[in-house]
Image (cartoon, rainbow, N blue to C red; front, side, top):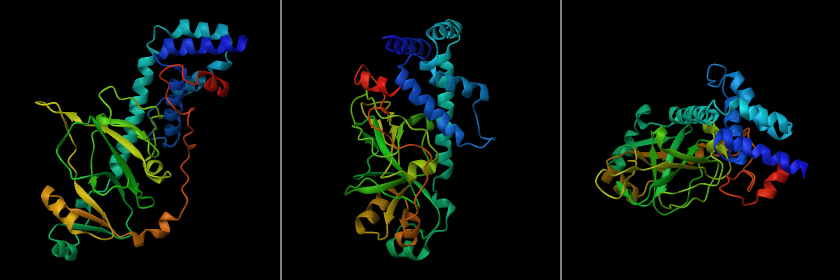
Length: 306
C-alpha cells in the first residue's frame, strides 16, 4: 500500500509540474537525453545542470514522499513545464536540422548526360556515393489533399527499404521543421484521421543514420499546410523522382508532368553496404512501455515496470 501511495504522489507531482502523465514525461525526457548524448561538445544545447535536473526527475519514485512534496512546493511557481517543452523543442529542431543537412540535392551532382538524353528528362545517377533521401511513396502527385498530414521515409545508402506500393517514389530536398509531427524508427501504422489526430508511439529524437538504418522503413509524419481558400491541405511539392535500377515509361511521364528530374539509384553498387550491421545506440521500441498514455489503459502494467 505504501509503495502504491508513493507512486501516486510521483504521478501527481509530475502532472502538476509538467502538465502531462508521468509516463509521457519520462518517455520525452529519455528521448531528449539520449539524443543529447550523441552530440559533440560544440553541438550540445542543454546545460549540464538541466540534464542533471531531468535525470533526477526520472528517479522521482525513489524519493521520500516528503521530498516529493517539498520539491513540488519549491518548483510549482517556476513554470517547469514550459521550460521542459522549450528544451524538448530545441532538441527536436536540432535533430530535424541534422536530417536537412544530410539530404541529397540533385544540384550537388553532375547530370548523367547519356541517360538524360535517352529518357528526355534530367537524370542523376547514384553509383556507390553515400546519400540520404527523404521520400514519400504514393500514387500520382496532386498539389492538394483532404488529409491533414502525410507520411515520409528517410533512406540512405546502407538501408533503402521503402513503403511498397504501385505508385511513385517522390524525393524531397527540404521540409519545414515546424511541420514535423512525429518520427518513428519503423512503420508506426498511423492512420489519416481527422484534425484530432493522436499518435501512441513515442516521438523519437534521432540522428539521421538512426532513422534510416533502423529495421524496416521509418515513418516521418509532416503536417500539410491548410489551404487559404478551401477545405483541403497543400501537399509538399516533390523535388525529384526516385527510381531503383530501371526507369520505366510511367516514371518518365510523371517526371515530365511535374517538371522534376529523376534520381536513379543503381543498387548493385550498394549490396555490400546493405549487408553491414548498424549500431543504432538505442533500444528497440517495446509495445506498451514505449507508448504514450491518454488515460488509465494498462496503468498497472506500467506501474509494475517502474
